[in-house]
Length: 140
Image 1 (cartoon, rainbow, N blue to C red):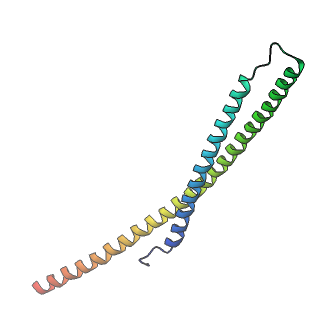
Image 2: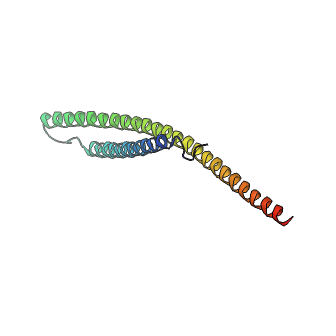
Image 3: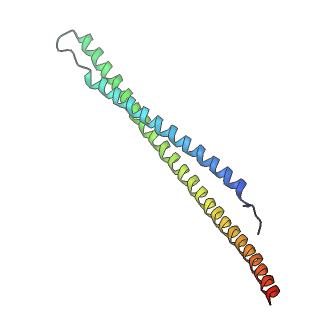
């Protein structure tokens, strides 16, 4: 058995990929939170828009146009929330897949370490047995 874990290079690569996936997930979650905050802010602005109670028809039309424009902005912000949330879901799935791969390779590395340690212990035991056998033969 080789002393070094043959997949150590691959394990380092997969760990790096996991870190990158975690960073991408963090960024996606941040963008989702920002989009949600922006959506809430636009909704608050839209809900505070009042129609004039008195005034000429031009003021009324301007208020209706303003309300329609804000409604479109709120709709776009809602879509942005959905898009960023979906991207965050995809990033979470990619991170989970990367983490699973690393966990699998970690288990293989641990198993390799156990086997190497067992091999070392067997070799040490053989040396101790040989030394004890020689001492026994010298005393006989």
